[in-house]
Picture (tube, rainbow, N blue to C red):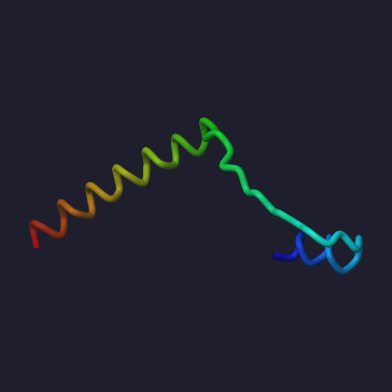
Length: 50
């Protein structure tokens, strides 16, 4: 991880812990997820018909 390397090498911090937190979904992300789900359903339906 570049952040941990920077903290150790440049800032000379000995013990570095990096924690990544998942952000709450935005309305755009929720819409894109809904679109993806619909497309996956259509894809599955088309596969079953062929």
